[in-house]
Length: 384
Ligand code: SF4
Image (cartoon, rainbow, N blue to C red; front, side):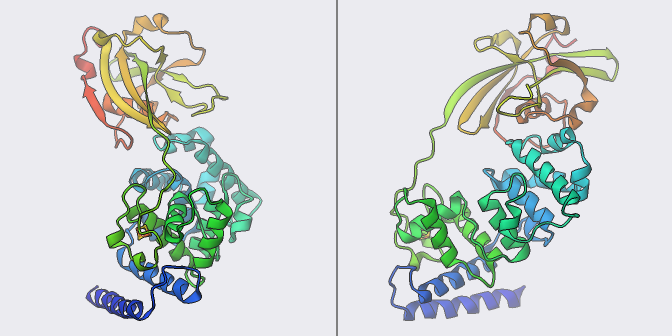
C-alpha cells in the first residue's frame, strides 16, 4: 500500500514536471495534449477511484447489471439493490430462468422498471440463442433488448477492452467544458471528441475515469476545478454554461392503507395492481390510490416524499378500517395480500417505502425522506 502510494506520488511528480515543460495551449486537439490528458486522468483515477462492487469483478454479466442499474440512478441508490440482485440472480442463467414478477420484485425500489424487464429479456436471449456468452463488442451488444449506445460502449470497453468511448450525460458535460463546445453541440461531435481522447490501451478504465470525473469533480452546478486533474487542459475551467436541468414540480398523492387480521399472525394488506398498459410501473402492486383532495387529516398515518423523474410527490397514506373497502374508488385489480408475501411481490418503490415505514417490510429505503410517521398500531380504532 505504502509502495503503491509512493509510486502514485512519483508518477504525479513526473506528470507535473511534464506539465511545466509543455506550453499550455488549453486545447485537446493535438496528439501531445491528448496523450497528456489520458495520463493525467488515468493517474488520478488509479489513485482516487471509488471502490465499487462492480469494479472488483471482470464478470461481464455483473458489469452489465451495474451499467443497467446506473442508468439515470446515483451510485449510492444502486449499491444495496445491486447486492440484492446479484445475490438472487448471480448468473445469466439464473436471471433467464426467473419469472418476470420475481425479477421486478427484486428490482423494486430502484424505479424505471422497463430496465429490469429488458435486462431479463436480454438474459433470456443470451442464455438461449447465444449459449450463455455475452457479446464482446459494443456493436453486437446493441442487438440485445435494453442496450443502447452508451450502455453497449460501457459494457464492451470495461468487460472486454473494446476501444469505444462511452458518452453519458456526465461525460458529455465534461467534454463540453473541456473543449468549450456549445451546449447545443450535436451529440455526434461530442462522441467524436470523446473517441479521440479515448485511451486505447485501457478503454474501460478511461471510460470509467471520465464518468468518475463527471460524477465527483466536474459537477453539474459547481465544478471543483481546483481539484480537477485535467484543469490545465480545460478550456473553460467551469466558466461555461451547461444545459439547465428540468425544473422539478411538486404534486400531492394520496393512498389508502387497509389491513385485516384474520387470526393471530395472519395479517393481510389491501393492494391494487397497476394496469399492464400503464406508461409507468406497469403491472406493479401499490396501495389503493385515492383521488386528489381526499387527505382527511384525521386518517393520516404517514406522510412522506417520493421523487419520480421530474416530480416530487408529497404523499399521504391514510388509514381505513377493513370494512371501509367499499368506500374506496372502484378498482378491478384489488386484492388482499398476506403480509408475509409482500417481500416477494413486484411493489412500486413508493409502496415498498410506505410498507417499510409502516413496519410491514424490512430493509433500507433509498429514495426520499420521511416527514412524519404515526405508528400504525397506535391508530385506533382503524387498527384494532
Ligand atoms: S477544470 Fe473544471 S470545468 Fe474543466 S473539466 Fe475540470 S472540473 Fe470540469
